[in-house]
Length: 352
Image (cartoon, rainbow, N blue to C red; front, side, top):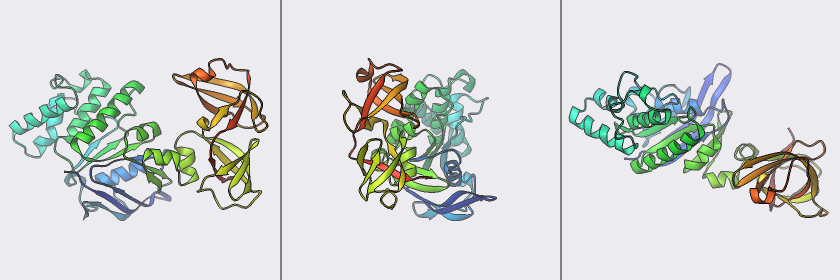
């Protein structure tokens, strides 16, 4: 049965550093929530406090409205999958899965049934007799996931479980994790620094910065409607361009006047700002329009259906455009191009 998780005003200090600073979060029953943020933002600290592996200085951890803040880790009924798998090297895959059931005193027949079910669930029914060193990294992570689920945990905790895998395997395993999580209906908290990973499989993503929650929302809302300039700059890619506020509702950037998104800071007309423009919001124009910007292609990267262009414009930082590969196939490094901003509004922040 799925369980609701609540973190209430958590504070965790390490000497002068606040790893968590009045951090609150609610994860609904059966929901998959990712904690996303740069290194040192507090996401792993939050996960360890949920698991009982670390202790907050202030605040509470609740599961289904029951305060578990003072319950030791071995009594919290949390399933945890670590970055480095942590399988017992002397036990087979089957024995690793059954281990938690054995510790809890389950009868051997029930252990066998459950372990075999989970081997089937993670797609490794014929690998039960293999030792960890006889399994690939992706297979080891599947066994670690099966072990975490074997005893029916209240909450599943995943601490960057895919970071040691290569790119193709990561995509495969993250999809497997999501499928299994949905099959079980288990409330899940997933820690990652990889925004693509978080956006691909989460119901909601909690973006953290300096121990605080910046925004929690669905992946599409985070990307399309960021509530702070940090989220706008961290989620997805953005060009950071100099601009000047023209009025309360628009900004002058490059050679254009563009509307401002709702969260922009309250600055007066003429204020210098940094304008965040998504690469996909920059479009090529066939001729030099009055408001078009000209630049020279300094970099071209082919990404399959899409390609990126890095364009040099005066002394500005390299400006990136994301284009359909067929639209950029005849463009080469050294070519001069013209482009415009095609967006209803842009994101701005005060110059730091």
